[in-house]
Amino acid sequence: MSARPLSFISAVLLLASCSSRSGGPPAIAEAFAGPATLTIRQELTLQSPTVATVKHGDRLDILQTRRRFAQVRTEQGAVGWIDSRALLSPEQMNEIRRFADSTSTLPSQGAASVVEALNMHTEPNRTSPSFLQLPETASVQVIGHKLSPRTAAVEQRPVITPRKAPRITKKSREKDKASRPIPPPPAPAPPKPPSNWLEMSRSNAQAAPPLPNASSPGAPPAKGLVMEDWSLVRTKDKKVGWVLSRMLSMSIPDDVAQYAEGQRITSYFPLSDIPDEGQTKHAWLWTTISHGGRPFEFDGLRVFVWSLKHHRYETVYRERDLTGYYPVSAQKASGEKNSVATFSIPVEVDGQLILRTYAFNGYRVNLLRKEPFTPSRGETQTASTAPSSAPPAAQTGAQPSWYSRLRSKVSSWFR
Image (cartoon, rainbow, N blue to C red):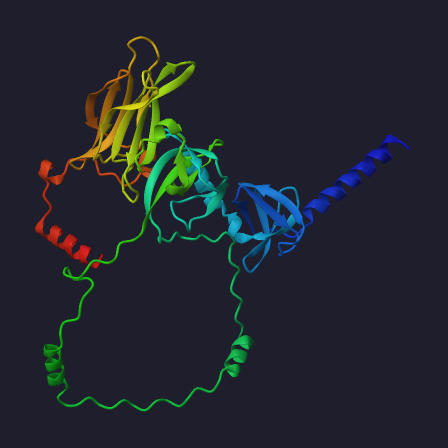
């Protein structure tokens, strides 16, 4: 056989294979896999054989929907059914990527391990989409914190474009009208009010006690919302999302973590290396908070050193009753002679954010300086609501008018 017939047959087979791959039904929408791994099955039942398995972020074509299930097609051409709640819309996927890029420069506040399997969310809320599940004992970097109401609702964006409503024709309108039941006869006219209704109303209004108004200043306040602490974490493969803070445990060594005294460690940093009998111990800085539900990150800090005499950790510096925020930063000592470590903490003082910088020379902590602190853009998006660093109105001389104070007071009643 000559070369020309062989090339002709090869071209025909190639075109046939291409037409078979592209000959499927057209897609009605596109979506992305939300969980870390997503199983696509041949039919709707869980006992149906697996067609393919895709990873988080893989693009899928949506072919049709049945109730909350969607038939999808992978980029390799596999077709099967999945739960549509496991899908992310293109807008949600773009937001996840933009958020990861904007928080990529945030400093780590310490490594933490996952207590048990934990879902990572796009927002600090239980109802927000979960795009990744962290396995038990997984390690993440804590980079932010936020306090969020437990019952807050998040806007659910449809992953699949809803179908158009059926067109109503003249024939269908007449058929619907004919199928309607015969309406009941009209009700009789109501009786006329008595001639002295105005006097009767006035007497009743004077005798009846006033009704409690929820918006009045004297009304009891509504019950507070249940607040939850959420941590912004970054995985080893640079994925960023929100998880419940109570499901994380800071990975500071046990021989120093035992001194937490029931408080939760929110950040920690090594300040220097201390060799002891062939082992290397560290001087540690940590921040703690006494209990959750606070709109800030820590209320105390502590510095530990390793005692070569007693072979245990001992406290050399401690502060309490702070109102501290992320990010805490520390510069470890270089190990050379007379080298010192430094660390900085943003704290609230008289309604302003102040950055305190300390020096640690191996056994003593000294305050170096205090300066105003302004969070960066990424820190403002992820940290809890910190007070403004601008001076209050009393210091600038800008007093609100009487009308403004009255309007804000009335607005607070309705809120």
